[in-house]
Length: 126
Image 1 (cartoon, helix red, strand yellow):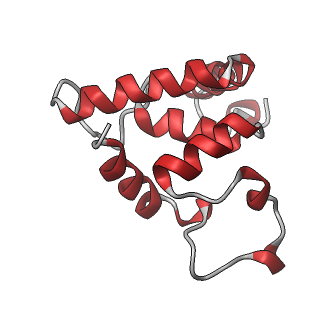
Image 2 (tube, one colour):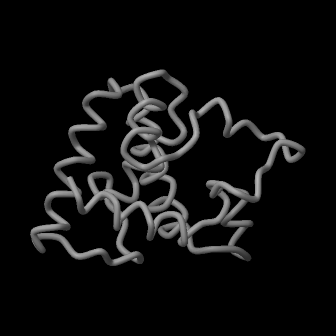
């Protein structure tokens, strides 16, 4: 209702479509980390073999971009170890919202498309 704003905001169909995708992404947090890692590896393989394009405007639950973001936000040991080993990201405990601990020497999740682009390059090696 906030985004529709009694007809003054976004079209209800747009809000419902975006909310549906967000709910589906949130449901992935209930999956086991090993399942998400396998899905990421499959998505990375599809990209490296050319079966899937790297269209940044296209969002899907099984694309590498979405799966990496889900793993980055899961706060379990397996996700942290995987991201550190394969993408050289700090453990998820270092992602806490604490501006005083931000480092300029390592990429942060807030750097947006630059880090995602780098992750795609690295995921192609799977």
